[in-house]
Image: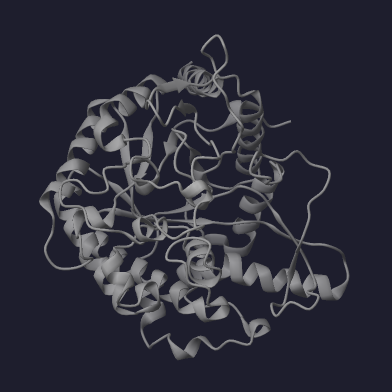
Length: 449
């Protein structure tokens, strides 16, 4: 059996976070409003009315958090930059104080021997841009490139690689199609322009990064799609879902074309212009970020307007979020990407993988999250098996360093290696923190012999 101990020399270990989920300080130092600042004020939008106004107070406590990362022995830290801190209105004048914060963070990381891996957009679009159409508007892609230029001009000399977008599929579906995330639109298939404009924004931003000699990645939530049965109707439904969830966001990047979406009865020609696909695929990728949580099982639809229906995955453990735990699905996904894209597939980094557990601080002051340890161990074994099958995987960034604001769930789902008391902001490393620290140290020691 291939195990995580057999991951290659130079494999990079990290953790991931996102700006709105941890920073707080939403009114400080000239930061503008984001779509999430507005969305959380809607009655019923977020469980128990929670907001990210304070979150983990990382804006003020980043040195403490970097110290926790140093103790873990990390190679890299994936975080996101809040666009409204840099350009409060989403365009035009740059807010120097916002960039000052990220400069302090980057320098603190480098001083700790940790390589920064910034994500330029992790869902907190400036509200002013949303009022002009958000990602449904083509102009937002050009504003994103402008914002990218401002950030890389300040930080590019110290940051070698950049992630443009986080999970454009999830942002399109939850934010624009279903309305359960900010900006809270419920447009169903009319949300598809948000997919194309995010990808166009990626392509334009990638060109800017290339001009500065920086490496370019993108991170998406990908899932292996399984048909509920061998029935041709279920197989066709699974193919339709795979096209929407996975291929819509990888085919244009790696193959320069969109997949067949005829099952949805939509025509992308209404908003895809000449030259767009060349802009999306042209700069190329130095790496593909894969965010994995679970496979998806699909059956033919009933009366639903969509050409698929999600079917349950039974007989497996579930996280506190109710998500099925299927570690081998990660191996299946990685091997499937290599088989689908061949030489067009760049090196892969696992940019998110983790689980929510109902963690509590015990009477002894410790947090025993054995479920999370088993989860991470199983998924890292799956990565090692994929590597043994020939997939080029360069690193693993678990989600997340800290318990944080979990979007529409507020503070009810805990993903962190570090427990956060959101009233006192006390950080308590969990058992999984010590396990991850020891795993990293052992991997390095084994390969140093």
